[in-house]
Length: 336
Image 1 (tube, one colour):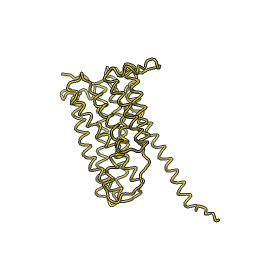
Image 2: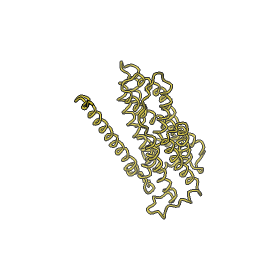
Image 3: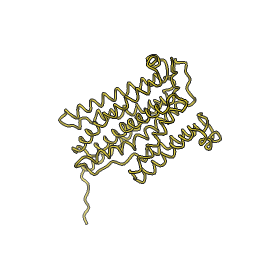
Image 4: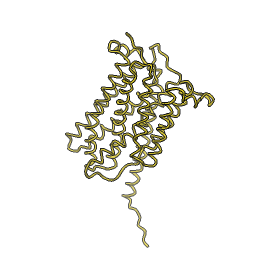
């Protein structure tokens, strides 16, 4: 029997790879922590000098909404990109470890916490006696909150059991519930608002989650031509998604703030200020996307588009955090 010892070179490569993975994990955790500060610390900054008052626990609710939006993006993005990859010839069989079980589990916890807030009369419960689970069935918001909890639970089970055919339906139910929740029946033309939110949230989730998973596949494939082909195919679809996100976002803003008042409310209301910050971030994302597309088409090595695309993912994470904050702030007044 002979023993074969690994060479110093192989051992060094393995150690370097392990250190690189640890560094990426630490960087990811750092970015997540920084993103969490946006909804947590955002309400006082957005409300300063406006004369408005936020609901108690606005920062925590904004963070939970941001987690919920991110938890939607990951599984939908994975399904979307896998569908794109299947249509490409010569695609490697390797796939990265799915993040859908972790994302949907986080979404379940966030939805459960938000349901507890609804059951306590939209106030932060400080003890179990303040949570009225049975009362959730008696209100529209309560039933929608329960739907989101159950949908994320089903999504987590589908992801753990690796059932991609059924995995798309629970996140779709969450998107519908969020669209209905954001536009109560007392609002003017609530179905129009819900339709805009439905399209906006769906396209945003596919855009952000799809790019994240596409970059994970490209890193795994390590320079295979299929990586550049996948990024190019994603880029063509993402251009349409960006157009829909922009159009629905503008229409939703005009419904909240009529054209005659929008310039004033963008600077004098917390909702308007946060919306303005989101617009600036989306514009930065669009510029990064354009930079990546130019590199993809003109550079000798199409994978030089990877760095700006990675920056685009980070900026999209900030957009998700700001979106969570936006849902926790008081709605602007429709001046006439």
